[in-house]
Length: 270
Image (cartoon, rainbow, N blue to C red; front, side, top):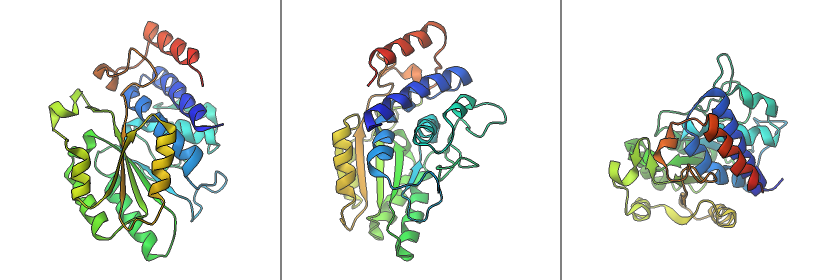
């Protein structure tokens, strides 16, 4: 399986999981699918037979509401049985709507309250350096999440301690909750803000797997500073009537919409 195949599977599972559970955040699951797929197929060091392997790279999905994307990737990579994805959001199940590490192999941190991922990622990166460990910490963050002050406090800390083992990938789909980011709190000049905080910045197409792989590979070099990859994406990517449609932040695919989404994904199967 390559990264494009995994991205398709993440989208297909995401539609099915939110359909069955009547859970939400499908638009975010679809926008982040390529980022997650490239990480798990081409970038990360991990061992499905030993999820707590000391030398594994750590992934924190700070935008925890897109947790189905991580669950789907982990299942497809062999961390747990694919059939369990059908229990997403179910009472008594371990695959909660916002990603949870409780009993789920391969998940490093439970998230959901936005702004928590980067602070914890900074702590993990500092600990790795103090312990002379060489694994990397990848934090996948939302653009609307960058309204949180904790993100910018962590950005200052990461620069101060030269955490070059810390890579933040921002799913920049330009929407948050019920509106566009720029109508909520203006982010631009977004890249310049990160540069001013001392970070190495790359601004790329977040659906282009070659660009994602290249950016993550550059971030692996010893730059002596933390790296942020601004991955420009489309909310609802892969299903035409969901793309750039704010309704699909919370809306669940049912009835004719579910059927149409499945048909479109199947027609464009990688």
